[in-house]
View 1: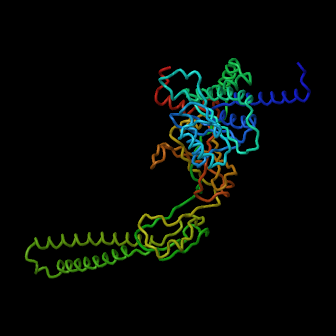
View 2: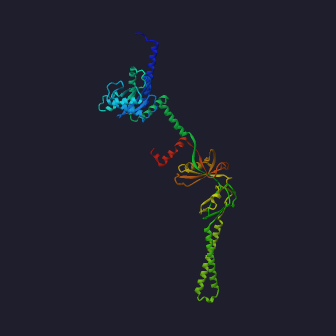
View 3: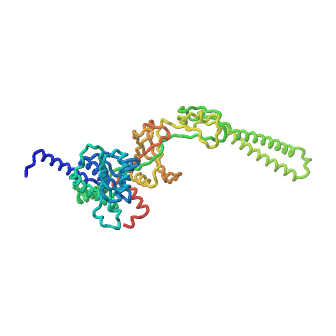
Length: 501
């Protein structure tokens, strides 16, 4: 035997390396789609054909899985549907078809192949079935014998024909890999098994052993129990000036004059606005008329009683006149009291500032002047902006016990850090001044308790009255594990589940 020349040896070595790479790529695939993709692309390069496609055969229907040099297959494309129809016809016989070199073919198969070749410009096509050799003997379930097909197409007449040797080497491995992935694809809980497989690989790669997991868990538990951190109770609320007064309408009426503007400074007793109440004025006129009538009646009775006594026929008539006179005098006194109250109510329509400060209602002249108002309606607000403020915080009912316990255990007021929604980057401080004693339930909001905290003047300069804030009430130290799981711990304690342990 003549020894191989160096160029022949190098050629055989290159071919062997290409075949090894093909096999590795095909068997290293995970999932039927990836396997079909590698069979199509690696097989095309190895067989030196124009196009190689892989189709699956399920429930009597062919579906194209991969086409060489194509990343995404548009299943609605005409050429894809024609190729799937061609594979479906060929697969019904469970045999290999070559066209146009195939000599004797059924008319239906020959028509399908001819139509496809004419529409695509393909010179030759070969359809090779992928059969499950272990299922060949199952005559009761023939549809499970054929799993798919490999389609090899040639478009150039000058291209060399396929190497039979390479095709014989390629097909067994391609069929074996496809059959294996088809069986895995049908396994129950396949996604979960794949995830567990990747987890096992990860654990094995990074050498994470059960001992390390146990030690790490024990250290985490000990740290959660013995390491202490700040217990901060979150709450939301509003920031208001400490000295704030809201002005309400004393009666139904119409605003006839507004004497102040937005942000205008006022002193205590300065006029703010004036109302006119037609109802009160009408009532005053009616009352004055009634008083005049009562006065005339009283004078008539007095004149009749102290006048000509001889006209009085009986003592009973004299007593009746005296009783009438006393009744009219009492009515007169009550009418004078009512008139005094009406005068005070009318005088109250000229509203004055109850405190010194600034008007914080926006454009009071435009929003109030010549507008009808109802009794109790809020008209404007006056606040002392050059003084400290107060945080009105709403603490959830399940969190208030931590605030109460911390306030009772500390001699100093609890510290509060908060941020203003209009300036979230700046932190401010306050001190708890009062903790409410009533749980409030308002609308859809959860049950909460109001907590008030005093804010110094320097922190009030960065906020408008009524600004929304997010605050944290500092309630001392607690175990890290409890801080992380206190919601769950409180839930079990509230419902009494700990008694089972």
